[in-house]
Amino acid sequence: MKKIMVSVLAMVAMAGYVFAGLSAVDNPQAQRYAKTVSIQAQTLSITYGGSGTNSVGSIKLYDFPEGVIHVVGVVVDDLVCDVVATNGFADTDDGDFGLGTSAIAAASTLGTAAEVNLAPKTAFDNIGSTTNDAVLAADMTFDGSSTAADMYLNVLVDADAMTGSASGTVSARIHIIYEVVGDN
Image (cartoon, rainbow, N blue to C red):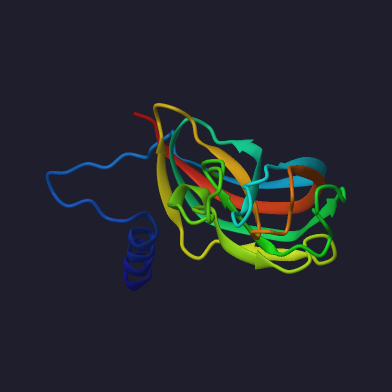
């Protein structure tokens, strides 16, 4: 009898318990995904922000499925930019990068929530000569049930580093684990 009781308690602990008069069913829409997005020499256009203003650029990396998305974790590995040296844009420029569900706005400080809600604003020194990493600080949920959300790599080059718009190529690996909780 004792062995049976322990087995029943273990099953309740794993599956949860529904109180009398209530019911619970598995959600067939709830799915967990683990993706690795590999970026290999993807073109990044940096728009000049003007004298004394940051220059910015974004690359759309991924379309999430439609629904309420719960992001469990994000890791950015070895982000590096190979710069095309024009208009003052150089391998030695400093700035920041982040991952978000919206592209960076012109002359932004890379501070709005949607620009960095998947990986925080992370400083880089010498954009072209070091590898840069970032990690999502806390899980987050967003509603993409009416319009599926996207994932953007957002880059900011510090003010006065450039004298005009320029470009480069970006390489990195982004690991993301998320769940589709449901769709309204």
